[in-house]
Image (cartoon, rainbow, N blue to C red; front, side, top):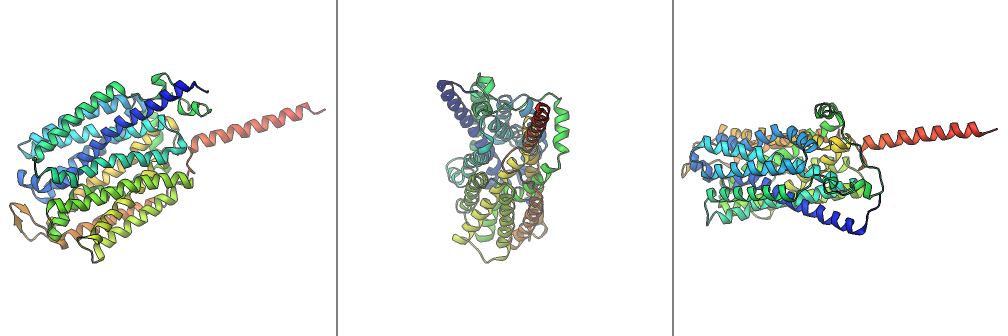
Length: 458
């Protein structure tokens, strides 16, 4: 129903305030995710680890993050974004502080585990909040904007972090980001509202003159089973597993060491390449999300981006590239192509009832982090297989040929993602469950009108 202009202004102001707080939380998620790639040498020196062990330490974040995605979706659909994100940021802050002060590998792994546990609920909560505060017609674009802004955290965790490490230790950085996470938890608890109705406002659909989506009535376990049983959700899961999981594993840990060991660059110079990849990823998310809404299609964007990802991985293996524009271009294209994954969230939520959108988003997001969790240590394992024993200041030095083995593995993951993308169901940017219900209602209404008209005829 229509609302007064004062309420409309309040709605917009509250919507963007909530979005800003949650985006700030999401930026810290990306920072935690990507920072180990820049401090890889420091971690190997501090804890005397091999490539595989370092990969396992970094991937500890992904292990718990992956396991928590389904619970995060249930939490977002039941208790709401406010509760989930506030608790998550508090736990992540404690974990980051522990990681920063850790003196042993086990303590660092515990801190990394707590960080992954805490931040695991932030993205799903944010995307669920977007379904409540923004129109379905603009969900692709707002998802792209979400990833664009969130990736500022990953960009800060690349080049800017490398510059900061000249003046501060990696330990101080992680303690500082932990304190920031605790402050964000407080802001979330005070100012975020999970739904417009929680602030005494109509829903987005009601503002558009449409009936509100029906509330969930079944136990969440029944709804979760229904999401798992929806075959149309799974292609997005495996697309993210291969395409985006391979990017996160590479940019989050091995992209900087490749440039350092393979081409002799200093850490600050090498980090520019992962900065290029993450900048390309951020722009790719925004462009792909906008393009999908503009075309009114999901599948062509997902398939095209996945195909480009496979080509770029092969280019990194087969083409004669190196430091400079060729390397920066390939890194940036790798990130840009992976940005097409953002459309997968829209495609997934549009094949399930709106009341379980958080669970669908969480399920496909699980694929992304499962891929990264598997590939990050596997990439390091391939390096160790052909390592010639070279050490520099106690840190293993790998050859460019060693890294090519990991790149082949990454390209295989991306190819799997492309194959899955071919099975994504086209939704034409609308929820298929409500569209079908509306069509059935119209058909029944039409038949009743016909019967009534026949009955009135003499």
